[in-house]
Length: 252
Image (cartoon, rainbow, N blue to C red; front, side, top):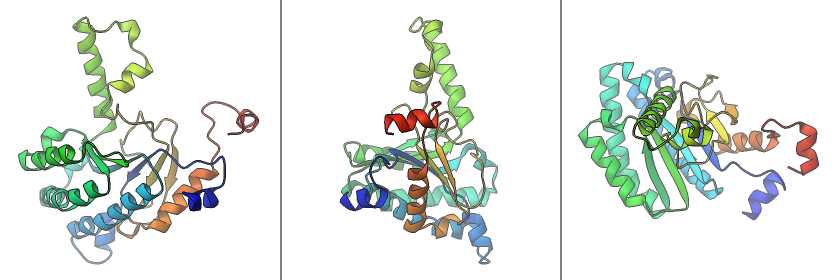
């Protein structure tokens, strides 16, 4: 941690919660004349790099957008290949994650993933549930709008059951009904692949996030790229509605 303090200086803390949209696998494969699934396979190594370096830097939570609810519209053979890849990666990687103190969680419409993948997910979450070094959350079959609609439905059910009064529904109550309720707000969003949009990812949680967009396609995303994102983050003045003068007066 001394090296980190020397790199980033005082008063410029690293983010607690980093979220990543891993974009560019298909384009990486296409540029090499390979099938899209080859790009997804190549994208596993930068995931390892991201997890390892975030853990080393003391990041508390890393959330990766692995598969969106809109991705079901992709060609069936690509989807089938992705589901197989997920199962294989889980079974292969969970032991190392566990050994390194990483807790693994999943959010999204998990019931849509099939029994084999759900069994692998349950086993991975159970094996790593007591780990506390860093939490790795994978958003699978996830959509931000879906998440907010589900939260609204849950609050409506609670009101109908007499567990909650309408007047008690505030931002905190809504946030507590989201899939990410156990996580801190996202401080830094990183998106690879050159696109500059949120793609229906963690819409509520990204309200005050710093947004870092990289032109690098995900299979080529490196530790140096992650450091560049951290450098960007520590250069930002996070105001949360206050003025720059107020932040400076408070020494933030």
